[in-house]
Image (cartoon, rainbow, N blue to C red; front, side, top):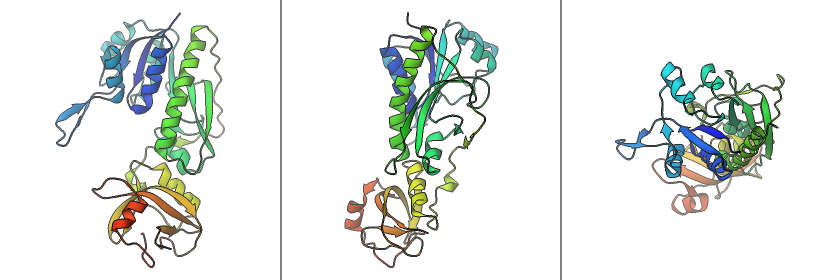
Length: 307
């Protein structure tokens, strides 16, 4: 028998899981997401979240409460009579009363190999730290920060050509399949839970724009992972001829020089050890572009520097 599920999510990352659960025949009795935010050129148009847009197309009731900590919110949540809740990047803390409301519990899809990278920005932090792999895990939620018992996991190698958006998209699809399998196991009473290890706990702090400036004194691999971990948002940046440039994709290259030094006319840049070659970038107020297109209109050659 299909489960009666409440789905709770907000960004693009969450949408594949919602669609996968529907495709597997589960009844989504309600979708919780964040309230629409102002958008458009003048900020006058309210834009619904990607999850709300998907839910509206499915004809599922959508709720956007400002808090879940009131009795009214609990009563509304409980009235759906859900067997379980599925949470994917919802962006709001679930109090204990909400966690206890579904008879089978609340289950979160988290984009890391817990207990590594608990918290807000696991995809970015895994790339920036130089991790060799990432993954997704289904966890039964408790009131801690990603501390619940883990049910199922899938692993994925992180390669040096992966940006944050590349890893995001792959984990989103992988996670959708994993959660569908987890809910199938829950439905037949076969979902097994295992406590997280207390060894290797790390926290993925929210990305601060202040950390986006590139430190060319670091080794080339660290620079590359910093750039890719922040691509496309907020975008790692440097200054070229007093103009800020976001670097969105690069590769390791041969060469040596002073940190930030332009080594050739193909935008190979020296790092503290080794060098990178820039592949995609974005000037302030401009669209992102391939470096070959950028170099058609801008002459960059030694002894110029990025700082």
